[in-house]
Image 1 (cartoon, rainbow, N blue to C red):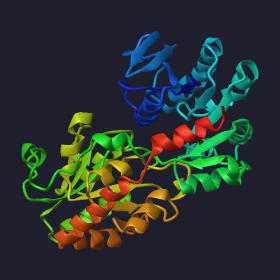
Image 2 (spheres, rainbow, N blue to C red):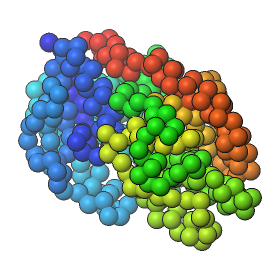
Image 3 (cartoon, rainbow, N blue to C red):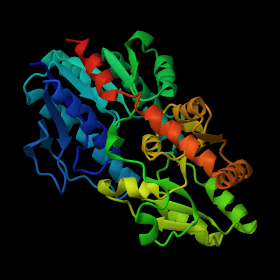
Length: 395
């Protein structure tokens, strides 16, 4: 029986997008008869030890790190890496070891694992570090720390036989780091949203329960993180309010580090067309996403290729169009244009965002046709099969 070990900070039922994506892939290996283990960090909800979830062996170790400040988070991540490495070295040898990017720079432990255990290595890049930290202002661009981390990251990535990118934009940046194109596989984070089913407008209870009425709902669902761009949306909301378009409502569902600043801007701009709701449980995602007429996905200018918002595939599953406010070279922008399932708006172009929203508001058939194209295309993704083939090539 072939064996595989995934190493990541979290795994369900822990919160975290990387954990949910990992669970989907891990289940695929179990179904194909692999022995599957996941090494994670312990936390307040998960004690150190071994547990099982849907045939996956979950090994948890260490834990107890603070996330209250960026510095505390960075220190916690730095301490996680040697802790996870030490645990991986005492576990039984796996034929394939997969490192992820949660915590950042986790891939640096792989060369030692390969040297001591002899396992084949895959790096599954959800983000590119230290580049994303530079773009978000966490690290000084071109500074000594960034340069050092860049050297370590590139060297460690080269030690993996295979590197998996979650989009074409990311694959291009990985290749620029000197990683051979022949060793790069593109596997989008599609598949987690399998349980999301389209809810026809007016058929669900979510709109009624939250008093959304007959408003044309433009929804942002998920993490309000530092990599996302929000000012364009806020300015578009202000412009629509000034135009008297009172039937258009911006609904932000979720939370994150930018929620506070967004709420403050909504108050400053006196936006009466903005609503906030807390994150919804997975079982309510179909209703929550289906409450929208139109979805928003956003990304800052310099982030293209460094991250790919996985929430986009949930939008596709909900059978709703997507407006992407972000760089045109992003995977999300490319898919939207290829499928004609929405529109791409440059950051800071609030006028174009206003025009797009009004165009969809005034054409129910455009909403229906665009959403349907995205939903149908989702069936063409097979992330489990692609990952399985990538791992099987190495043993």
